[in-house]
Amino acid sequence: MALDQSALLELLESLKASDADDVIRQALQAMLQALIEAEATTVIGAAPHERTEQRTTRRNGYRDRLLTTAAGDLELKIPKLRSGSFFPSLLERRRRIDQALFAVVMEAYLQGVSTRSVDDLVKALGADSGISKSEVSRICADLDSEVAAFRDRPLSHTAFPYVFLDATYCKARVNHRVVSQAVVIATGVSADGRREILGFSVGDSEDGAFWTAFLRSLKARGLGGVQLVISDAHAGLVSALRAVFLGAAWQRCRVHFVRNVLARVPKGSAEMVAAAIRTIFAQPTAQTVRAQLATIATMLGRQFPVVEQMLLDAADDITAFADFPQQHWKKIWSTNPLERLNREIKRRSDVVGVFPTPPLWPVWPALSWPNTTMNGRSATAATCRRVPWPNSPPRPASRAVI
Image 1 (spheres, rainbow, N blue to C red):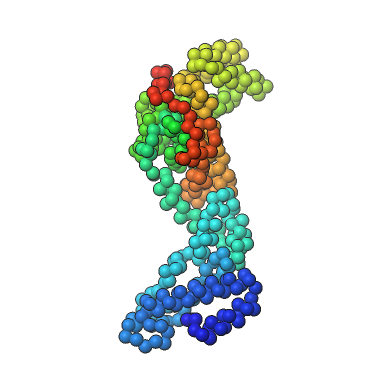
Image 2: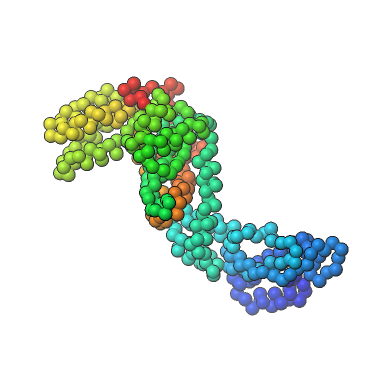
């Protein structure tokens, strides 16, 4: 298989008769085959048919190996040995596509392209054999180690006064059954106004033990300086917050709370009730926010006693934002800043349908989420516009302390 003079001349004639694409493919195939033969000669200690004292074994034929590249499918031959084994270092075991296509497949899959469309994309790039669904899944499974490294990184580099928690749901196959699994994501806002993904996990969002373990894992990685946690009222979450983040306040997401209220009133009155509740959040000071809540609760209570009771029961939770700088209110009274992340995850999971294992892959697109300032603009560490933050932020009122 070495490229001697006659082989080079034969290759030249073949290239002359080929179009441009075939020229590149054949040239690359010839180069890789020559490198394989050179490495095999080094391992064996002798070239084919060469007699030398350094020879350690003999060739025993070849085995075919198809390598898919951006230049097309390359048919390579790997020398077999009579004793021992040989595999060229420029190839990877159990992988039949090169690194360039490997990166293309992962990127396409993470951007929400279905496995069938990934196969079409690989073929369009020149790989006639395409790529199977199982191969795509196996390639993307290699991302788990990178996802785990990001998830377990230290968080002690700065304080995060604001922490957002939310969950979205994906279907996964667990114990041979298709079940709904919650993908929980925590993001934080640092004192200089920069948002960052803190961590994520997969489990039961209504299980207090799950929330406790998740929050403790954040603290164990160095999360500190938390003053306000914003989330929906998931069962078990509030008690977990009280146990893990002592002294921090809890802001119940106003959007989720309004949805819960509207579920208890007739559809014809929903807009009126929602508009009345919105006036609570339109007040300029903490005192007027809480005064307006009491007023609205009394007003709506004449027609909807259940709404009045819900407002009074949740008064401390949905107004915790008012004890923080007024310029931050719109960003911290709901979990809306997390919705963009959730949409990315749902876009990926909608393509997959049912994950073969509890899903961590769909979290990966969210990890490219840009750092943003509190005013919502994209930013990098060098260009981030910081939001003014007092040297000594006001502590939350005792009524909302967890």
